[in-house]
Image 1 (cartoon, rainbow, N blue to C red):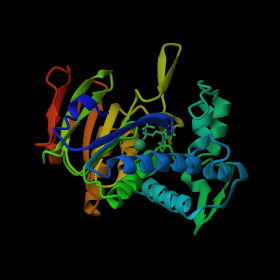
Image 2 (cartoon, rainbow, N blue to C red):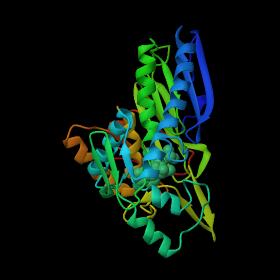
Image 3 (cartoon, protein in one colour):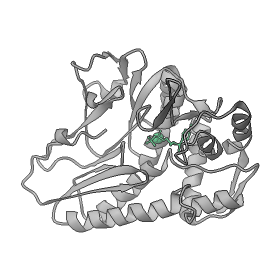
Image 4 (cartoon, helix red, strand yellow):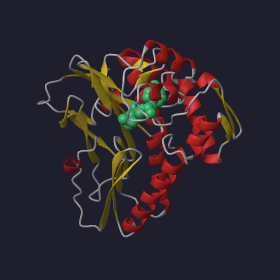
Length: 329
Ligand code: ADP
Ligand code: MG
């Protein structure tokens, strides 16, 4: 999402940069100021630590062990994040669901053994999927029916929240964190202007839908281009509709969420993708009534880009993208 060339730093200040592979994606961190170097080293270490806790692939990870044993006692951190995930599941009417591990596995998204599951296998995976099979009591987790937790739709956003807090503690006030489509821009550029973040064109990731200006914001994108496979000429992507157990076909090809909280931004981008344009906008209204505000940039499968009123000034469409743009009232 983050097209680095667009993040012109405009700074004579000391800066540091780190690029590494973690949580199944390439991460790029950049920070400014005298504390930058040390802070980013710590940030990278923190990502590896988290990966070791929240992975459902690494058998040693605490989350994978809970899946293996049908539950048990979770660490405080895992339990707290699971609680957030369950809350988001409820708030999104189940469109975001942290217990779709069995389905992800049936499609091979969690293992890399991609395939369209046979109807029987799909039905069986459905029986073992859904937050209804998860019970969380303090730090005690029970997974019924072989349910498998998969925090892949929230983990990177949560990680961004943690890194933000860590950088703040280290005295960093200006930074950009790109955790593979989950972006946090901290403060402003060192010249005092807003960051400019390019939103990728899901049909051509060398191109972009537009540019968002932002400061102190999480900008998280879920798109069909992140992970998919093709079978018999059909493309199957990795965002599953909990209702069907299949890749969501909601009329959207990408969703970008801007909000003040990383974990929420991440889960909401996945949920909005599943819900489709009308459902996503309805969810935005619902959550606004409850005091949670977020903005949306939606790309539809018929070539339109819709963006919400809070972005009227902040989003600049790319006139050469071939999309038509609709600023929502
Ligand atoms: P990305 O991983 O590309 O950043 P998302 O944030 O949308 O994209 O997360 C997708 C991941 O979340 C999938 O790889 C899978 O692990 C998990 N997932 C897929 N569908 C759902 C869903 N409906 N609710 C919650 N998690 C999901
Ligand atoms: Mg997400």
